[in-house]
Length: 137
Image (cartoon, rainbow, N blue to C red; front, top):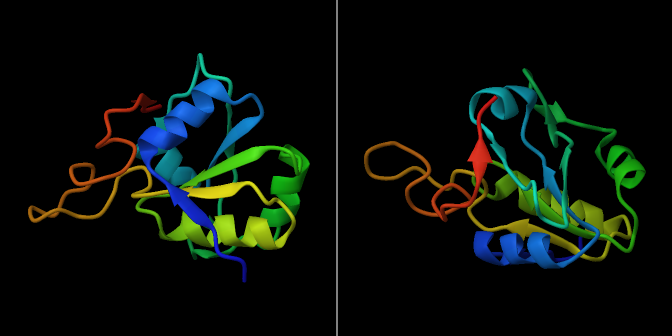
């Protein structure tokens, strides 16, 4: 499977602000979007796509992931994948590259990053830790 590069949350933000056709692909599940929050990219050149890598509640693979992605993005788009902490987004970026979407990158640390010493997310790395805009529904 092709290797996918990762980018820092700050690099992803710059790409969204400066590069038309950039898509932020949030691969988390519906409950994560609803209860944890979403990246807020209004005012950038980018668009937010919500396409789950796994299907809640059993967390099986979304067999329509690539099909859904190709309906929402073109091979010319820059695709930035984000999940909770970086694992699903890296797998999704690799799958996208293998499917011919060559400009696919995983956002390092995901939306919330790894768990810290106190058992919390959002304090070590990731979108939230970088202080980038986000919202809860």
